[in-house]
Image (cartoon, rainbow, N blue to C red; front, top):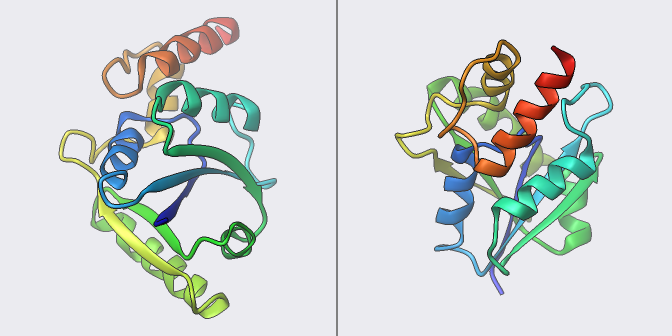
Length: 160
């Protein structure tokens, strides 16, 4: 079974992320969406909230949602997966992703990174930008799945 791990913070999940997941399912039998837990970052949504939002938005049995702490390649090795899927939005993403891919290859030569371009409808959308716009009461409808839009509005209504 061809399986890929699609890692990210997914804070929050965007329609760009969903586009990558849906297109990846055309190439792989299964996609593990792996929520990265980074103790150096303070996320808007908890690990469990992010996992639940992804599960609700991805109604495909071939999508598994999980979380990991530490090095991605160690997580991939534990899961027995040798393909890491990364989305690229713009040229600015490439340099960082190229560095990560090469470091991962150095740490675990048997793991390959596959890059997928984000669809043209979402190349400008990032989780950080969505959070910022939503925090100021801006409308992010169409940029995130409906379930994410609902919880974003509720979270910022509480803070406002």
